Length: 410
Image (cartoon, rainbow, N blue to C red):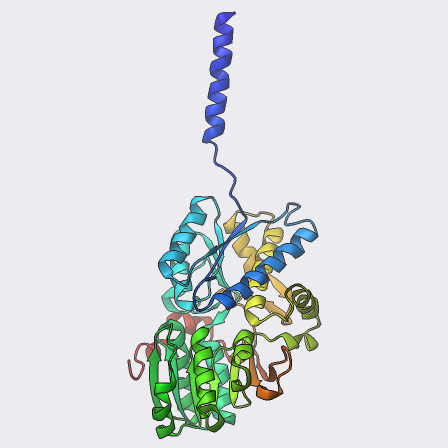
């Protein structure tokens, strides 16, 4: 009897030991990281809100594959080392699907690590995931290839704004991509390039550049910076009268920037975006998103909210289609074959590079005519067929790469 009790106790202890050694369930289905602190914080919050809305919608209808979906969000602080550490922490906790970021350069670092470690990465910002060595089977983006907004805006600018131009660009990959796009289009359109100025993220004083700009007399100035840097530049150029004399072209703009700049974001300011909230009038499927977001946050959603929303939506759709919430080798083919119609009409990921096929919207500021969140008007919408290069060309990076690697002034 005693021997039986001892064996029973030993069996119980062994069972507990095996149970404690069993891998813990991952804390979430998807780990998201955004630079919630730092100069891009307001725009990162937009992306996060888009993700949150998608999660709420899916859970309201029963979740993914019959279970509530859960996401975990952390701050990447707009630092590559922090973003990479966050990603490794997610993977160590059992999460093998990661999304987010609001920097093309940081997205490249995360994408490279994800592909080496077979982790599914859904980027939600402008980036170059589909170009050259930066492509990888495990990377997708609901943002846009960086050069696409530059190319769309450049075609518009050389047709409508003039031929003489110069540029102020953020001194990292995204800013360089925009300069490369304008240089290529300038050559084709007979433009006259007058010079480039490169600034680090965190630049707040742009007034020193005004005499140089006025002396060169460009028809338009390409202002390829973002976040607080862009707000500072537009405000200073407005206060100094530069934007009353010279048209300004922004390869990426955003509603919070327009709002904060006020009357300085006038009719001479033209910006590219991947989406604008008034497009619900053209794309009826966007109206529920716009209405829900406006009701919840007191204003319409921006393009970054759309990118986060579509990123989460497509992941959940692919999980349903693949019949799994964790097997990335089944979810990736589901994403490759996925088609959806959310805020922008019919879209999909190109199978050859995993980039979302979306239009580029050209916006013109309203300045003193702006009312509430009606801050700009859509004056053009450029289809992806006009901005996306063929995949074999992108993979070789033969069009923009050589220009980007030999930028004037660098």
